[in-house]
Length: 171
Image 1: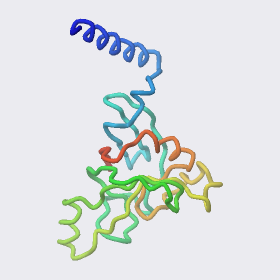
Image 2 (image 1 turned 90 degrees about the vertical axis):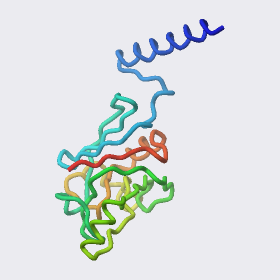
Image 3 (image 1 turned 90 degrees about the horizontal axis):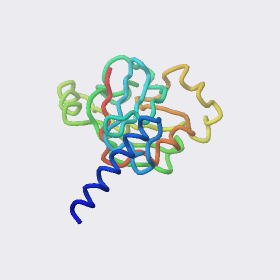
């Protein structure tokens, strides 16, 4: 029985490797369960499962995109390591993945500056009011510090990302 299980495991691994080589990933493996990487300077967000890139999206950022968020109202997107700590199905921006900003480092920096670090940073769509804009929203950085994709893209991302998924936001 043990030998049979090992053979099944090996066959499954070979199937996944073969599918990946052909560009197809089995549905069971299609979840960004390892991490999301946001590169602010490139305006990209990449969903990863293990070492495999599932998809890269073009994004819009906070209205002041250079530098890390330091305080409420600075219109900057944070930089650092976070997690998706909540999924908001009824967001004003259609759907949203809430990010665990501020982390301990962010709170300490804000304390030193004597300011509130703010919060409510999300990866979100455009919402009913601006959904018609579609991908043109990426022509400028317009959020208060969030990461924005189209409403269709957040619908695609939504089932792939679980609460607890690590999020790395790079400069």
